[in-house]
Length: 192
Image (tube, rainbow, N blue to C red; front, side, top):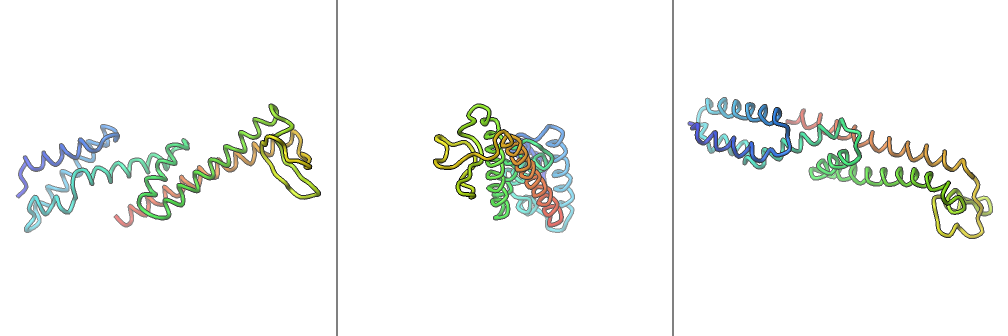
């Protein structure tokens, strides 16, 4: 039989470990867990030890809820930091999450690099651009000094090219992470 004291101790510990989850969500979680424990109490042979063992420690259960809340928030976010935090959290649960996290880091770095390069073209016009030598692409971006023997071919069109390419990379990266987090969340709901 589950005593009210044991139940209150578990719920207080759970409340303390839920941390950054909003007050409304926290109270809803606590009501849900309390109802689950009371329902489980009615099963034959359901002692407090059995029920709480099935749930796990309050710290473990709170960590699952925090992870779920972060992934849910990140899957609707446009913030690169929130998206990468969600992908990193997903990465702690498997290889696919790690791949998404690193793809996100690379995508954001490349996209940001192109946008930054476009902003540097007016400031360093002789050192920023797309260079070719003997009809072959030598390099692109901002370099000090500019590639020897090559000439810059796009001129100020490089700004537009870099802004478009950088923006597409940033948006594509955001979309990739958001979709992956949503698919992960749906998969966890189906398995859970």
